[in-house]
Image (cartoon, rainbow, N blue to C red; front, side, top):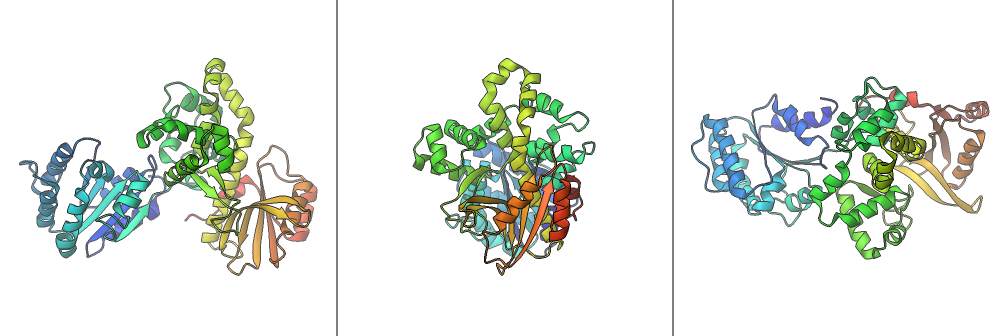
Length: 466
């Protein structure tokens, strides 16, 4: 299995405990939760029940069969209710046993009382038993956070641990593509993001263009309608959500811009944006160093594949049908550097986070992100691709990221030096430039004089593993 060493280690530590443990594990669809649980189960005594979207009696019957076969090797009959099933587990678990219920929301949606039954069983039986390690897993992030762990849930505060499974970063994602060059690996990540199921869909023995054509644009391909299918599985009335994602993918970032673009009321758009944030598809960002409530906040699509899909396939579907797969792919590739600009900034930020965790930066950043705002020196708006500020607020690293086919010109070097002057209160300032195509000679010369760091795409792969 690629990656997920820390997640497996976390599960194994809980399994090795001498007392009752209850883990709430969650993460968006396709992120690899089931794969992690299956890998953990290889070396543990587990009952692994994958709940399904069917009625309560059928799920209870399936669960009854599974636990009876596990403990007694034979199925006699279905339990009358879930409480009886849980009490049976308590009687039979005479050694460490992991009880895994995958996609728990399917059970709780059909029978909300199952949460109260579990709460009663945990409080009165399983905590005293000490042999049971319960794992409730789900893909509905909002359900797991609110209906399972929320303060109004019967199970509130019963968990001994929680674990959100997040997408891979660029470095772990690159492990899926042994035969790609480093530049191709970065582009694949810019297109697909870090969702394992999407990464598995690409074939590193053919070109990126061929992958886009055969794995995304072609009718019937797995990724051809994946984003819209996932939205339909989790939401009702997806038309507004589709419109919002399309608007953001095509450059609209503020609530007013989005609502005007799709002709919907701002209050309605704000509500839908919150749902998409909960689903981990978009995020609200503010200039680095400002509070989360900053009025400068903007919305961006945090999932690379959704950004790609809504920028190209969703927006141009009818046009691509007329163009045909090959010409549609050519049209996308002519614009791909514009998509990769933002993706490359995210990649560089992930690189810096890895470096910080490995202790390879001069300081541990307390704040990290993009900055934009007024620069009093030039009396105009300015920006910094990535800004890292230490805990004291007196030390910072200013980073410029360039994803173009030309060497970074000296003008870009001077632009960053100008942007730095907007931060008069920061005494210790360092510069870093990360460029896909290298640097002009004057940039190299001045960087040496100023102590600035120059990196290329290959340097992004020379980083300590986490």
